[in-house]
Length: 123
Length: 296
Length: 131
Image 1 (cartoon, rainbow over the protein chains, first blue to last red):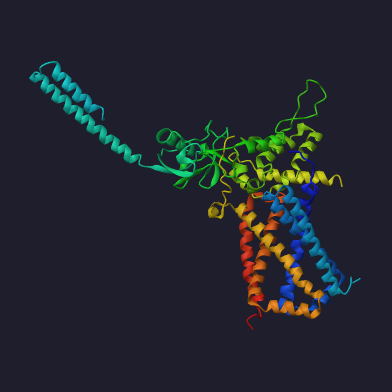
Image 2 (tube, each protein chain N blue to C red):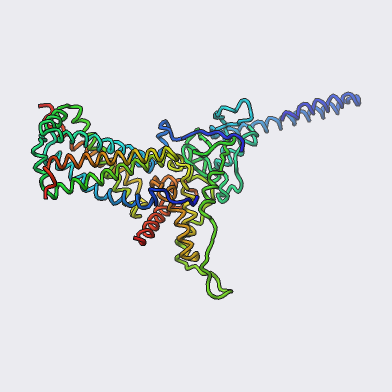
C-alpha cells in the first residue's frame, strides 16, 4: 500500500488548506450574506450599487480572495466526496481535469465581473 | 412421559403371558398402575408450571444465505423463538437456535468473552459483538445480519480478507532501529507513554469499526479505523525511534490513509473494546500535518 | 474464495432510523456542500451579466428577485449555508481535538440553530415580494 504520492500529492496539504479556507469562509460568507441580504436588500440590487462597493480596494480584494478560497474549498470538497465514494483510475484523472478546468472558468469569470464593476483594478 | 405407558403395557402383557396371574398379583399390579398414573400427573403438572414460567422467549430474525443450497441462494430471514434465561446473550441465542432448531445455521464464534473478535455482527441495526450483547437490551424481533460492507460467504459469516489486508498494510508489528546502548539493556517505555497507547492496544480485530465506516464502504483502498489505530499504537510508541515513525507516517499520509476519515464517529460508537478510534485518527492527522510543516 | 454474496451498501435510506448522529452530520454536510458548490457556479454566471451591460445586470437580478420561488429558494440557500457553516465549525473543533465527547450533541445543536436562523430570516427574505 505504500505507493508513490499522486500528482495532487500528500493528501495532507489539501486537508490543511480545506480547514484554513473553511475558517476564512465562515467569517467572510457570513459577512457577505449579511451585507447583501440584511444591510442592503437583494431585491434592490443595482449595477451602480455593486459598482460603488467594488471600487473600494479593500472590498474588491476581499471579494477576489473570497472567490478563490470558495472555489478551492468547494471543488476540493467535491473531489474528496467523490474519492470517498470510490472514484479511481482513469475516471479519477478525468474528473480531476474537469474540476480544474471548471475552477479556472469560475475564477476567470468572477474576476472579469469584478473588474467590470470596478472599472479596472481600483488602486 | 411417553415412554412410561408402552413399557407398562409391555410388562403387563409379558407378565400376563409368562405366568397365570393370581388375585394378589392382580391387586399389586393395579396399585402399581395407580401410583404410576399419579406420578405421571404430577410430572405433567410440574412441566406445565415450568413452561408457564419459562414462557418468555425471544424472537430472532436471522439472515440466511447459502450459495450451495437450492433453497437458500436468495437471501432470506429465518424466525427463531428461543427460550430466554437471565443473562442470555445474542451468541447464546444463536447457539441455541443452531443446536435445537437448525444445525445448518453458520456463524463464527470462539471465546464467548469478547477477546477473540469472531462474532461481530449487525444486530438491530448496529455492529455489535454477539457474546457481549445482552438479549434483554434489544427490542424484539431481534434482527441479526452479517457485518455490512463485507461480502457474505454463508449465513452470518463474512469474508474478512479485505479487513486483514488493510491491517497488514500498516505493518502491525513492533520494529525499531533505535536500540539502547548496552547490549543487555532493556528497551524502556515510560508509564505515560504506555498510558497513551493503552487503549489502542485493545483491538481484537473484530471488524465492527470498518464495517460501520461509510468511507470504508465507498472507498475500497481506505485503510480503515482498525488499521490506522494499529498504526497509532506503534507510531506513538516511544521505543520505536524517529526514523520508524517517519516510515509509518509515510504509509498513513497517503491519499487513502488518514485523510479519508470524515470524522463520522461510527467506528468509535461501535467498538466493543471502547477504543476512541476517531480521536486516534485525528491525532495522527495532526501529527502528519506537523510533520509536513517542518519541511516548509 | 468461492463466490461470496455482495449485498451492496446496507445503508440505503430505507434504514435511516439506524443512522447515528455522526453519520447524519456527514450526509448533510456532503449534501449542503454539493448544493453550495452548485450555487457558486450559478451565482457567478448570474453576476457575470454585468459584463454585458449595467442594465442587463440590474434587470436580471431584479426580475429574479421578484419571483416568489426565487425568494423561497433563497431561504433554502440560507439554511443550507448556515448548516454547512455550523457543522463545519463543529468539524473544525473535532479536528483540533476539542470537545470530542460532545460531538453528537454539537450536531443536534447545529441543526437546531440552523432551523432557528432560517425561520428568523424569513421576514427579511420575503419582504417586498408580496407587495
